[in-house]
Image (tube, rainbow, N blue to C red; front, side, top):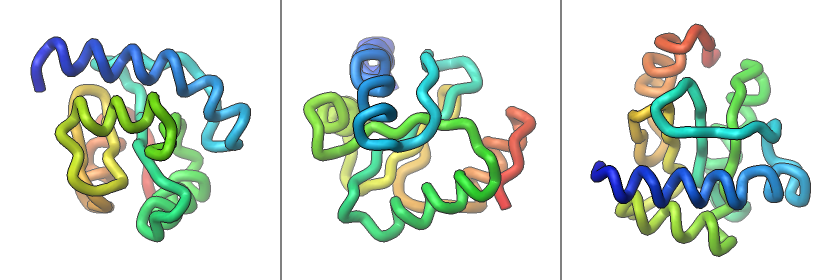
Length: 116
């Protein structure tokens, strides 16, 4: 991922994450910056695997922010990450495309979080 793409994703996250978490009710609102221990998920309300991943994150107490694909900020982030499917989850600097529980468990464990 290029530096420009990371900056654009960060701008989308900062601009939309707080508002989305309050308006849509997704995940806890908290500032996120790429490269730290943030977890950001691009999701869509119509996506079954997105709902499954959100349910697993919530049940496991994972700290994360959701960007809704059907918003301008979500689509911008999706485009910047060359998205082809949702969910797309950014864990620190690592990008997980689609639902990949094993990869998410590994990356979250690096942050001290446990995905059950």
